[in-house]
Image (cartoon, rainbow, N blue to C red; front, side, top):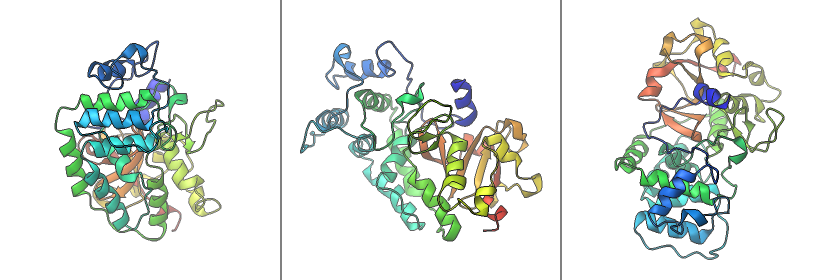
Length: 335
């Protein structure tokens, strides 16, 4: 069920291949742990790895040093636990991508948005596949949750598998990002959307808080349509307004069929805060086969919930080919 759902809601259009997270008896990241320890990192011994233990500041510092070849940073409290956002930030900066992260964040500020402090490093981290969806939602961690050693091993293994072009790819994407200035309702919508960057993919998820989408408690996070639901229906600015009554369907297919053909928006006419739908046949896709939705950020980029969690993605390559049509809920609501 979950495998089918992920295919339907988080099409793997990233050009960066993600490391495998096949479950083993010891850890979901067993394959990554073996690779990392084989390189002498994180203790160098897979049999004593302790994948579920919290990642400490000292362990993270040593890991970044081992990956980058630079001297380990001095930590005030070496035993302090590290959050997922801090893990991502340390790896991004350790791989000399701090400037790129700053450019992502600066572009959002220049557009009139107020992104969270983690925005830039999360944009780079997830663009390069350093976070992934897990086979079980209970394993998902939000940006402020304590990272496990298994999460650090997954990220480190992804870096070890880089072919060499990945850092330049991130730098070029960041340097070229040019977002239009937004105000009013578009600004409200996109401010909410960027505030959620860094949360994990959770099937059926509609909240950044602990939730029970199917009766079982799972961490905060979103699937693709759940992310749209959170931004357009559950946000404080939407509750009690016409906007909350505009998007009715909870699935991508239902959301896509609510806009008549005559009101569908073509790629060249997209505006910030529009919904963007995707399917296997592009504009010829019928609503029942629409399998992904995101929020258009502008400048050829979207924010969406996919296998990398809530992240930014450029609408080029496979995403461009699969683009079906756009929808403008703000206009539908008369806003």
